[in-house]
Structure formats: structure tokens, C-alpha cells
Amino acid sequence: MKVMRSVIAVSALLVFSTIAVSAQQQAPLPDVTVTAPAPIQRVNPFNPFSGDTRVDEARWPVIPCASARIDLGQGAKCQTGTQVETFLTMSQGGRCDIARQVAMIDNARYRIEADVMIFDPYKLTATGHQDKNCTVWTGYTNMPDDFRDMNQMTRRGTGWRNFAKGDPQSTVEYTDGGKNCLAVERLRPPWHGGYVWVVHASICPATQAPLQNADVDAVLAMLQLRQYDAQGNLRGLGNRRARKGE
Image 1 (cartoon, rainbow, N blue to C red):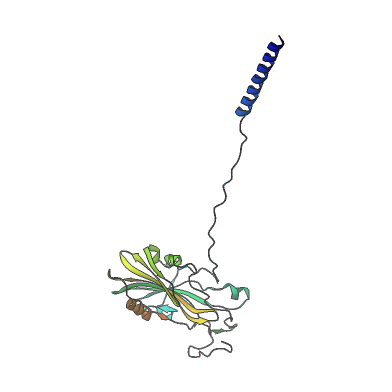
Image 2: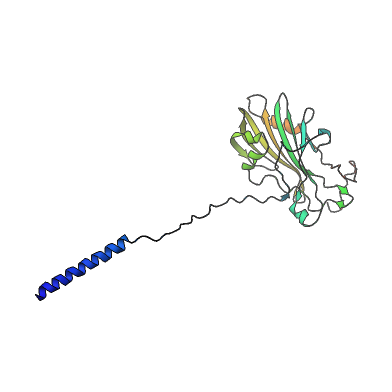
């Protein structure tokens, strides 16, 4: 009898243990909220300029090329954006008038669009000279990708290739409408750690033939840059004497 009671007790214990384990296995899982990590945001390179420097042909007003700071000669169209300045001169309360303009032409040899940031280091207004830290600090800071958003021509571009970075000129080839085109950046002349102007130009030939170095030279020879800023300038065009320390 004692053996029988022991067997019954052990059997009961096994049954209860099985029920307990089964209850634990069938217990509902707690609600868990999983939060995915935020995607890594790409940080854009620092832009040293105050103001919108992006070329916007649809919004920029047309101006006479004869008085523009950039020109491509007879038959060209010129437009102007708003002036920009550097964050450094703005934070110091200095004056820095940097013009932002674009010129374009479509002739028998080329389709060209060229824009410029340019300032007159010798400009003198009623409030004084340009700030000593006024300069076009840099061109594109994320090449060659920045070339893709240069203007309406490059925004249509495909097949970007053969990027060549140089000083003072960088280039990259692309295709627009089946034409082999070229995007160019050129900076000149050096001034106080930066430059007096930076030019970006897109060049497409009228034919299917690829552009040669002679074509680039011919286009840049067409380009007219007017460093002198007539707006509010008390210094005449012929008076180019630098201030002391320049």
C-alpha cells in the first residue's frame, strides 16, 4: 500500500509539473515596441556664403548684357540673382557685395551657359570699402556631384564621366541630348585666401563631335567678366589703385 501511495503521489506531481510547464509555454508574450534607429542623414558641406547661390533661370530677371558682370557676346542672354556675401563679413558687420549672375548663348558652334560669383575688391561706397575679409572663398565643395546641379543644362545631363580636378580649373564630361558636353569650374585670381571670382560653365557642341581643349579655350575666350562694380561705387572705372595692405 505504501508503494502504491508513493506511485500515486509521484504521478500526481508529474501531472501538476506538466500542467505548470504547459501553462508557462502557453502564457502570452508581453507587447514589445521596437523602434528602428533613425537613418543617418548626410551632412552637406559648409557653405561659406549668406544667400541662395543656386542658379535659378526661371526666376532670375533678365538684364542687359552690356551692364552685366558676365557676358558671352553678341546674341547672349544675361540674368541676375540676388547679391550674396560671406558669413564672416556678415557676422562682423562689414561690407561684401558679391554679384551672382548668369549668361547663356546658343550659336552655330556651341550651346553655353556660364554663371559667376564675382566681387570688386576696390569698390568704395558712402559707407566705406569692401571688408578686408570679403572674398569668394571657394567654388564647389562636393565635386563632381555639385556639377550635376550647376544649371538647366547640367540638370538634364546623364552619363557623367572623366572628372578631372585641377587648380585653377576642374572639369567633368556628361551627355545632354546625345551631345558630348563638358562642365567647367574656374577660379581666379587669388585674393585674401579666396578668389575674386569663380565661374561655372556648361558647354555642348552643336554637332555630335566630342569637345577638344581648343573648344574649351575658345569658349573661355568668349567669356567677358567685369570685375568693376558700378553700383554705388565712388571709385571710377579707371581708378584701380589698391588700398594700403592689399
